[in-house]
Length: 51
Ligand SMILES: [Zn+2]
Image (cartoon, rainbow, N blue to C red; front, side):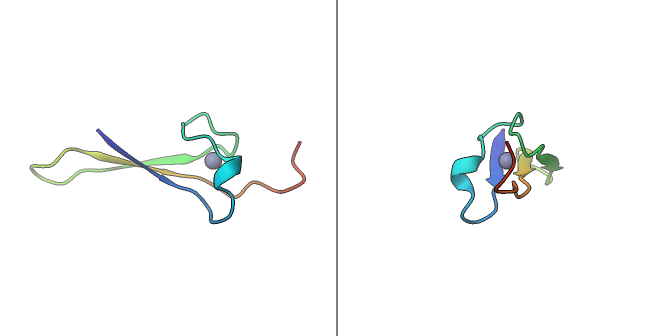
């Protein structure tokens, strides 16, 4: 299965490439006839002061 991660620009270091990312990413599955389903993980911006 194909997994794509959409991470806000300039925040790539703050995000894990998993669904367990602290930003609580949302998952979307795209299916086309005759093709493997593709999963898009959409990450949300993490506030700079979060800790
Ligand atoms: Zn994330």
